[in-house]
Length: 383
Image (cartoon, rainbow, N blue to C red):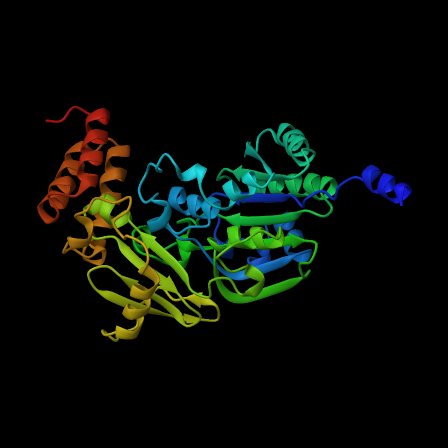
């Protein structure tokens, strides 16, 4: 018996599984080869999808990268973690699933990827992966798709070699406006909220695609489940949240319009500002044009159910929910804003001033006016 206890004492403890979370800025799902973008500029992402599970309908919680990133890192939607506008609350980094893992013995190691210096990034990934039980959070900045893909490949190869039993997650923070309709800048469309999501590692299917609607907020509960920690959320393995919550405050920031709140389900997307709109899905993508029907009481009720339990005003000025202007009513101003910016770039200040006057006449309190005027005054002397 004494020899058995001695053998047990000399046996190393089983090391906890580690997690790699790679977050990529401004990449739409439809820009990735594994999602059908051919010829592919993303061979490394495609290889990860081949060796893991790809989620073809994964959605961000916000059209803004800051709040969307906070949702990934906390496992909470913006009205809960409170990051709605430009600056996050001071306590955002101290809450959520990573904090829970910290308390249970996992370290955290953060890496900012500079695509122009991948060798240094690889060394840092290796150092983090060798820490033992660790959550490695990699932020890859926006850039040329080929450069971003190369960075993803370099990180994933180092990780897989160092952590053969680890859990790997690659996720887009938000999409981007490349090739998108102009109105996507303030609405909630696939251009900014449908993102790539791939999970790989022990216990995950390889060369497998999941078409269920999932949210990037489910990443936290997935990691906790895989690491056998308690969570109130649902793992991506079990279909995630089934309904993905989103919001856009861009119309409020630019034109003082009411923010948009909505959700995506299997059948489409409901979006509500002053008025509600339903956008049906077709072949896994949500169409950019709303359904011509005008009443969607069942969808409005479902959104209200999703919003039960959190204060919609958290992180926003108290007045926003009483604003009577819907962002759709300000779509016509987007083209004028673009014209002003182009005119100023060309030095045509008199023409820019005329367009500015038109914007001011239609929306005198639009916050973007101040931004445009400041830019105009730095590029030329105002008459």
